[in-house]
Length: 189
Image (cartoon, rainbow, N blue to C red; front, side):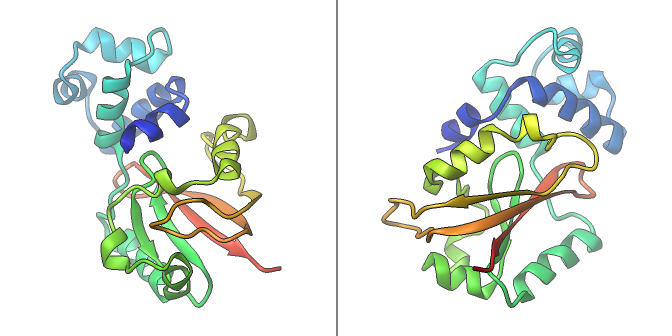
């Protein structure tokens, strides 16, 4: 399941994300390298873009930097999502793991929230969602102050989780853990 996430993301962006994650959490390169089971020199080359992590290393990086709702502010954001009257959900921007969803989104997906929390929604993505994801780098998604991204999708073919045809907006937030979350909102009309 997570292999799909790795294939859809640009590994060259992980190095920059790792450097920002380390700075926010005040983690030295040597300690991050230790956590990832690589040398400090390898980690330095990833951060500078001189070396791309292999698929297994990409997965380890994504797990290390995955969004977590650690602070009161992060948990309040999740509560606002859970209390929203509109179809909205919050996922980890790296892994697409579900962090929170509104009751309207839960009804739309036709799967109980308890069955979805902490799981990646990526395997259920439509071709249009995959295409929108592929364009994020050129749209400045990974830069500070990233713009909101709007797109349209048709229905998916997953028998387990329904995505209806709709227009949607993605907004990226940095959480207190240093990871990023993505707010996914269905747009009216």
